[in-house]
Length: 122
Length: 130
Image: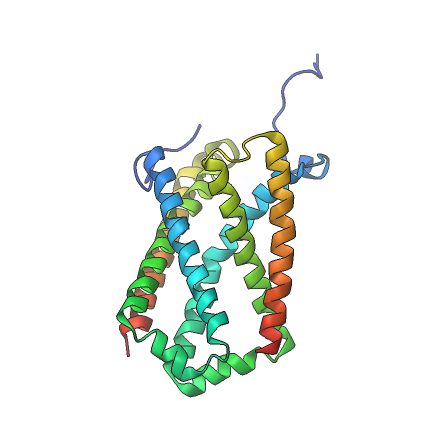
């Protein structure tokens, strides 16, 4: 028996789509960072600081972090519901799954706030 | 009386009995690297924070790469990210209906393993010379 609770998008198709869209956003960010690192050559503090001082890079980084967190939430939900089941964990499964998902959500919210603080904190 | 043909649950001990196809191996590594990256986000944010905090912090991050331990950990994390990235692209291509056959899946899995190995090697060289 599986446990139905706190599904990210409340719809499997929506979860599926969000997982792909966020993957493409994060992949684009990784490729952009790679292109910048390789084209800049000697990465100095001034160049690095200057990159993250631009509004577009701050927005892109925040978007990528948000996409990462949503992607991680759906991924961790998928993994959690695959292994934390009443079939192997009995009556404790529901409580364990709840605590697991609560932990994942808190960590991801912390990451998001931390990232915002890095980008606009000082 | 025990009927040996009855269906049984697959337990953890069976993991060492089965010979897994390459597609299954790439699939489970994609999942494991995803879980590792959940924790890896903290590492990336920490490096971003310190490197942007001051010139001294930036230099600390750069010089940390000259320590063999830090270099190995960094390359390992990059390998985890690159695997998830490349295997993810394979996933997206298969979602588009490209290579959705058994032969296509086996071929794509081989390409994933080979290209990740090459990319990690190149990333390692780039990190050492930086």
